[in-house]
Picture 1: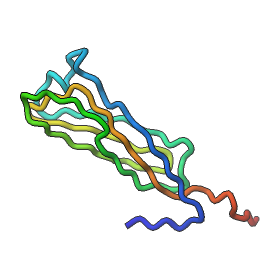
Picture 2: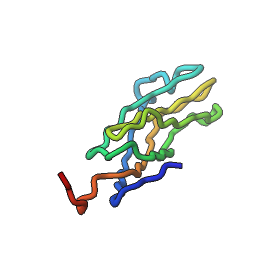
Picture 3: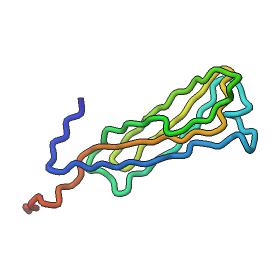
Length: 116
């Protein structure tokens, strides 16, 4: 459990187009075995500490002749950014993927008194 001890909670959300491999016959569409695409997402503005990040499939376009196997991975979360990865394996063929995410965490409280 992440406990947020703050007077202010920040919520950021966004979308990441991970790839579009159909047009260029890229590895997620034409390859085989384990394939992974990773994007670093920066928080603007940053949080006061590492937030909780949730990610889910916003859109995926797959080949109907193979099994759809995919894994969405959130890692390396800091107050400034996180890494978002999408991985497939075996004979799965994916043309394109968009992942939607939301981050919740502490931000500086604009109403807090600054005592020096």
